[in-house]
Length: 232
Image (cartoon, rainbow, N blue to C red; front, side, top):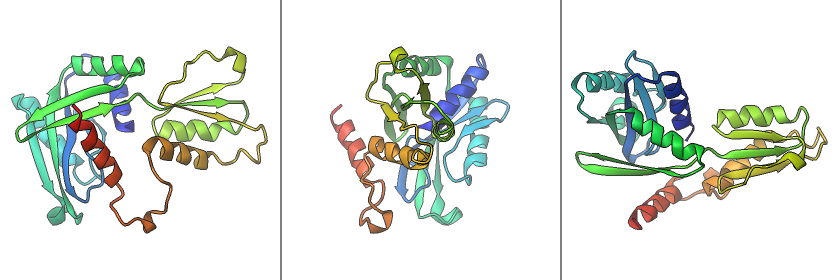
């Protein structure tokens, strides 16, 4: 979800400008990103976010400029087996978006609510739930906080350091994790492991080695997405 938070940051710096949004809406076989990955395309050619490992972004940006010119949305398909050596196919929906889309998204995320977005295009419909950023509460002060800050920022978390627990007034929600430090610098030198474990819990992962899996690594997520959509 970090891409969407980066996109919102760029939007805030460019209020009043026009944007196109490219969204990965379908995949077949292997793909670097999963459905829901997004890339913002600005009128001056600036892009934020990614849809692949860097293979497709330039071409998608060119398609975005055409969307700016015509005002018509388009679905672009890439057969990555023929062109990029990956064993799959992806469909990317490119559309112009107005300020209302971003304003509604910002309002929901700031209120710590899930934002539901529905994209309808020729040949299908894409529904996605965008949760607020994970909030990491760090109880305790000291140099051990720096790795949590840097790693948390890198994965798009909202990191809050709490020195005095008596001043704590934040209401935890379903997207909140907490770390209580031991104030032993040697024992607290495990920030990467802690962040990885938090990601595993909120992502519903098992923690088993990928080498030992007999199913695709995204199978559980895809089943959950289909289950959620079937209940609508």
